[in-house]
Amino acid sequence: MISVEQREKIRRAYFVEEKSIRQIARELKCSRPTVQKAITSLEPAAYTLSVPRPAPVLGSYKERIKELLTENGRLPRKQRYTGRKIYQTIQKEGYAGSESTVRSYIAELRQTKKRRKVYLPLEFDPGTDGQVDWGEGVAIIAGERVKVQLFYMRLCYSRKLFMIAFPNQKQEAFFEGHVRAFHHFQGIPHRISYDNLKVAVQRILEGRNRQEQKTFIVFRSHYLFESHFCTPGQGNEKGGVEESVGFGRRNFMVPLPNVTSFEALNAHLLAQCLADDRRRVDRQPVTIGEAWEMEKPHLQPLPERDFDCCVTRLATLNPYSQVVLDTNRYSVPVDRAYRNLVLKVYPFRVDILHQDEVLASHRRCYDREQDIFDPLHYLPLLEQRPGAFEHAKPIRRWREEWPPVYERFLRRLQEQDWNGQSIREFVRVLKLHRDHPAALVEHAVKQALEYGCIRADGVELCLRQLLNPDTPVPALSLADLPTWAMVGEQPPDLTRYDQLLERV
Image (cartoon, rainbow, N blue to C red; front, side, top):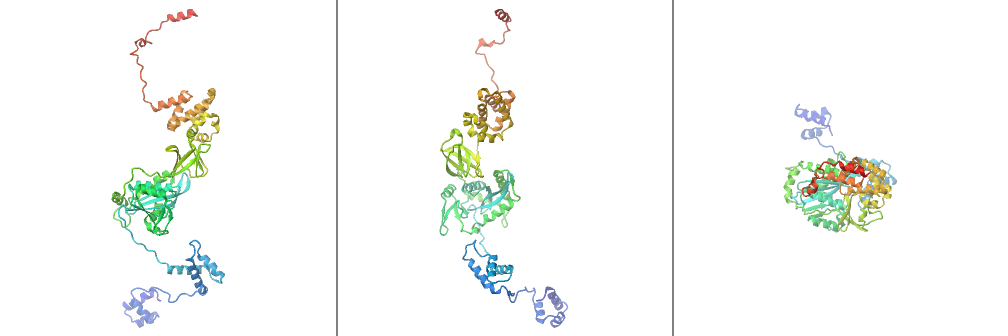
């Protein structure tokens, strides 16, 4: 095969210099058929092997390699022959060549058998379809590198995207993600496509049939959308949201978000989703936001109230007025310490109920074996047992954070220590936190110290003055009491002093 440079010389000699084929072959020392092919062909021919390259060492083992690859089709997906394992197998059988030769031959076999996957391009009507998926990402939350679970919902017509982060993929997070997405879209798609998520599908039956989780059916009936579950292993059936998982992670989570809490992270993600509305998808005539405005009238309306996105569990109160959830213990007010309680577990909070009354609400903890206290829950018991004040665990934790003015007020109370009531008086001050903001109580304690009113009553008085600073004190009217009207107006009678001295 001649080079492109030789081909150019032949064509120039024939067409420009008008030499004969015989003369060109003689001068350039090539055959006349080669000259003829260079003249008649407009493009240089691609090089192809006329016969396969010899592989004398591997040759006798090629059939054995094919057998092992064929056997892979009958083995579990995670327990199949790899290139290295095949090399080790035929090496035991006498193969003396290199591993790279074996790997190259396996790649050649796979390339000849492998066909490119192709898919049908899809088009959706406004409001008809949405798709849901989970992804995983990393963020820096309160200074720590945290792995977060990312919930995605995408409208198929407008391609409008919603993305929110949770600590896990549990059912309460799955439902919460839906509700927030529906509010973001200002409507509900008529059908939503999913993988076969355990939080929605209890069992995969034959064909398209699924035995769904009862709580998912209740959720779906609340919002009246249809559910569609993909064929196992066929993520392409909801390819739009599959693509959005990678898109959101690359564009909304790079660089790593550095935030103080999950709330701040989700505010960041929501802002990114809103900014994405200005993007125009390739081959689309309008932006995502403009397409969504056209799609919005076709979405189903939101119900009057949202679904309560929680998991409900029964709980029993322990002797320390706590209930246990996932190895963590949450406090309950001691003056409402009912034996049997109900927990409502949300993605970011835990509510503790007796019948329909919420007794306590805590931020949900995802660590293990932690005590989550609200110190206000223990104040009534501390008022009865003031001797435990110094060692009460909820109060010790609170003291690490409360304002220094509280310690000054407590010391002044203990210095007076009238009848051993100083701790009870201080507990009365702390109980003001039940009904008033912490900053206002702190200000009232500071004022009471300045006035020298070292009593709970003094703090309460200062607090009332702070709450009603402009309330004028009504003037005392004696119009209806003429007898008292002149009190304080008449001049003093000095003879009364002489009378007093005479008696002494």
